[in-house]
Amino acid sequence: MSRKSSAGAILIEFAFSVPVFLALIYYLHDVPKVNRYNEQMKFVSYQLAQILQTTSKYRANKAITKRDLQYATDAAYLSIYPGTSMRSKKGPGGPFVGPGFPHGFLYYVKCDASGRASVKWVLKYQYGGDPKTIGGVYHVMTEARSRVKILNNAIPESIYSGLSMQPGEVKMLVSSIVFYAPMSSTYEKVDGRRWSQSSSREEFGFLFAHAPHNGVSDQFYFENVAVFAPRAGLFSETVPADR
Image (cartoon, rainbow, N blue to C red):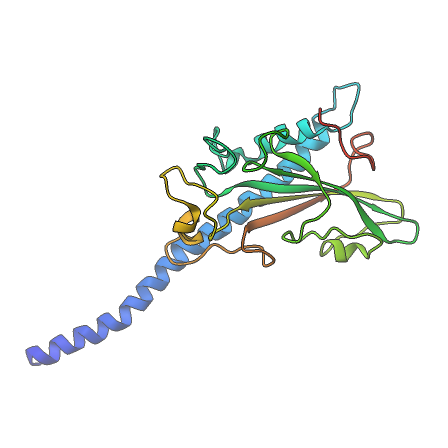
């Protein structure tokens, strides 16, 4: 075989091997990392639900407060944001260590005698939020970015896919999210860059893939929802007190 023929064969083999090599890197690095984030967020949601169920066990007043939710989220998110890395280093806009920052919701849902469900109140928590509130925990009744819908007199499944309720039953939904707004110039990273200067791929440490959002908003990543029946005395139709 001539030198030219040999060089041509090597180029052809190289052309075929590069896509295979890149695909291997994608499936060996990015796909497992996506799965790890999903599992971590599932763990956060169930941890948060468990903490809320037990945090007031030895108190005379069992009612969960906004302060309780703040402490619960502090603990639950440690598996993703160790130490104080979940919080802004300066103010509401950052800088943040990343990826993004913790963000989520606690929903109180009640089913009436006819089987129709209503969201009675929602507590939102975010570590890039208003510093005047308790740890960024405050009451909201509008939110279109989550997979949980704030509806009244609705079929339970229309509030959240798979939600099943009996007449008179109360369910709590915990929605745990990593917030990241790729096009935002409001938020700052610890290296001095604005979020608008990086992509979700860079923010979450992927090599090729962009981090998957929840399918509703490109700001809510790896959303995971845990549903639980609250223990007696923890919650009521009244929005939890500050502390």
